[in-house]
Image 1 (cartoon, rainbow, N blue to C red):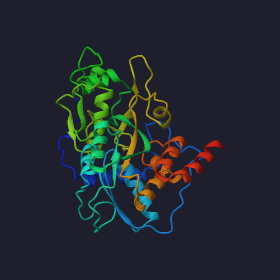
Image 2: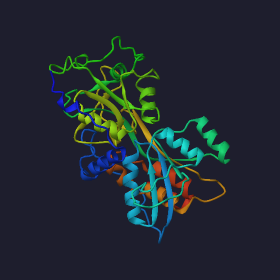
Image 3: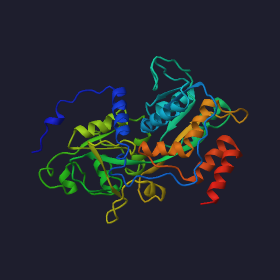
Length: 372
């Protein structure tokens, strides 16, 4: 039997500490974020450089996706290096909770939220971070409250990855197998449930060991995507240990040699590794990368979005506008890569800048695009 001592005495994790540990790990491993997740990408040539404004002050709350937390933390860190007087709080409690805060315009502000200590920021939510596009009904709800639709800004590409403990020898999985591992209904048609590692072809001492399932709670858009794509909207097994955040889930997998779970590719730690996926049996296993997410060969890819309240009759708050301009720049996309997600295409950046700033920056980016 396998050694179980390392997973018996599990203690609760403080979520703020979990996030801090992950960010510290990402920052320390700048050249290792993509270990096991394909080659490290580079931003597309021609992306516009960011030109800082003379001075910038203001407060801003970003609420939503915990999957996007490592990305947002690193973006905000770099942004505040440029603008020390700009105060930004990140509340990563999941896309669904963030959406409720965005619609109600109420942030649960506490002293010390964000990167800065001992400050207070406005209780309104300026930006929603969402790891899925808003639905038509959600957009209607926003419009009913505000009189206009939210402005959608894709800021990076990501993927939902299957994670196992670093010591697990599994080489790849099909979506049918993922469905039979996590799903109760097996809508992809596999005739047998998969509950032991031997069902996936692992030899002794793994063969008779039970698979321990980890996942996200119902506030997670990552859970929604896996349920839709891999489980074909079937129900999850009742044995999935649902975590309130991606960070705590990844740490749990890293402590449990029999674990398997799912999260965004932004969470890379030495204690876990990503399992390549195949759309169907007989097809090649594909690792999530900038190329495989862009061309759709990796089966569980997505855009990562920010939504802002941009009334057509007014301009965005300067601190919000500059933050979004920074993200849609060469420097901002370098930060995205460092955070373990994949950069936008120049075409998408041009579209974003046209929405945010009108013709000036978009025209410059388009001119650069034409020279490549």
